Image (tube, rainbow, N blue to C red; front, side, top):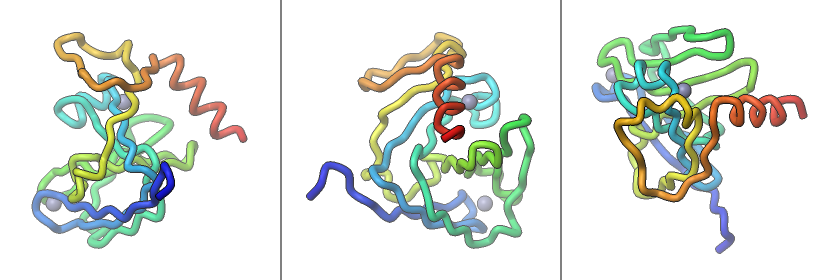
Length: 145
Ligand SMILES: [Zn+2]
Ligand SMILES: [Zn+2]
């Protein structure tokens, strides 16, 4: 078995009106500490970093809120579960880790907007950490290529 393994994941909202499937190379999860994500998610936002080939069932039930020039936040219109963050600009779809069924396959590896943390919590896992400036430089470099 190679070090990174392509895995199939599934997810759903609380009420089940929306279900989805996603593939992930390694199940890597990142946390975002920015105020916008914390306000939206009710806590720290945990999202799959490398989800691809995402197929959604029940997309009619998906509510969309444009939260910035960069991206939109997608949620279930019935139960309110937060499911996706997506960006046309960065060709990126972040899948909320809490909606994943196979959570035992996920690994917490990265934290972004660490300078946006309110400071009343911290995580013990060793992760790669980036401030807002670090992350903006990182994603700009990735999407330019
Ligand atoms: Zn729902
Ligand atoms: Zn954020």
